[in-house]
Image (cartoon, rainbow, N blue to C red; front, side, top):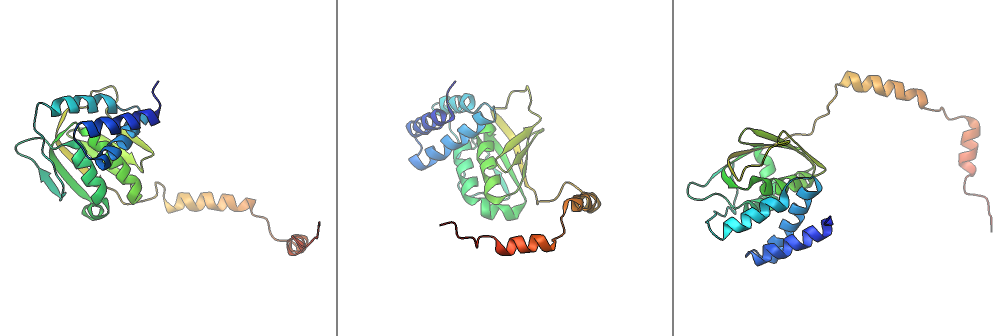
Length: 203
């Protein structure tokens, strides 16, 4: 079994050989490593994309807006991913972002997952009819289980979620009230022990 470090290094070098800069190649290495860590087909789809890249044309999107579409060629998932990663602090204010015609979307997803960690927010992604929840780059929940990831996504919808508790105030207050039973009142002996702590000379 290949180590994550070996995967990252090999992907970085292969991306450079495929025509990307060292900076972009490094980001690609980190992103594919992440997919493999989550048992998602990063290496497989990157291989297929590089093979296709030699035969077909792909569109580069450097400046992302609320609605992004390419009518001629599919978006390159690597350039798109790096652009998303670089602009995430601005894109966070858009809440919802849509992309049309994206090649090998699972590669793009890895960059979005890393962006989730940067802004400290969960991100919902819908690839056509499939849904994914990116949780601060810690895990990825998906209903793609046992299904092949598409090579072309007609529509990718990205929703940046506001941080909210998953419980009600009543549920929290009940639990907190129970936790108060473990609190210990400060007695005189405890105060005296605390006051003398660290004053004994052991030298």
